[in-house]
Length: 263
Image 1 (cartoon, helix red, strand yellow):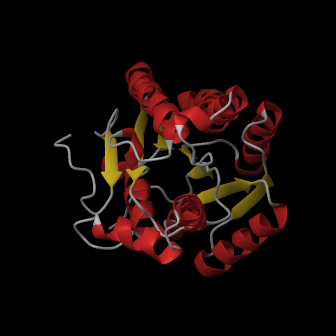
Image 2 (cartoon, helix red, strand yellow):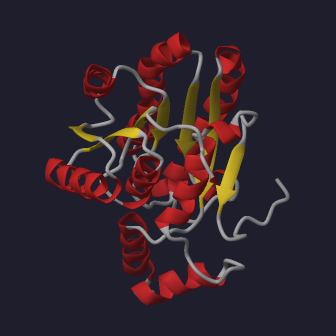
């Protein structure tokens, strides 16, 4: 299927590994010019070379701390200088540490707001003018299944990621007249390094083994397994495409049936 986005320009944040890298790879397969970013420059450059060699698409690695507004401005400026604009933005970040509410500090909350919410706001603020110029744009905000079904010991993520949904829906209404579509994707339990670290953290705090923590999640999913990053990326690439031209303001989960609610 031709998704109609060849030669478009995308920024995918948090994309040196895991779901972000899989999304960048999926877009590159469609001949999208992709900027990837992360804090670890060595891992980032390695990911860019790998994606370029496998897809033949241009991939621009830009070291970025998403909690730093100046870095975000530089990320978009560098992309525009290289590729001439921005058509697609995928806001993807890692998650905050595990904790119960009584274990969190004010600083924990401020760091989480900067990482999960302000990073999205700042990236959107920088790219929207370029999308308005072209009367075309796709913004996809990566959140978590926890916005629909809060997870234990993830009070920081459960709370602040939910704010991204309010932002997504409101922006979708405000930007529709410019041909800019805004959606959110909620991955379920996915085999990434972040989830592996989370399982180890839970094991250390609860006395469970790492294997038991992973198995517990898998057993709670009707498909009886965790997702592969590529399975999340497939939906994101579709939402970034011309084929998703009448989809905006939605919140879609990719979770193997984990979420129990009707909506």
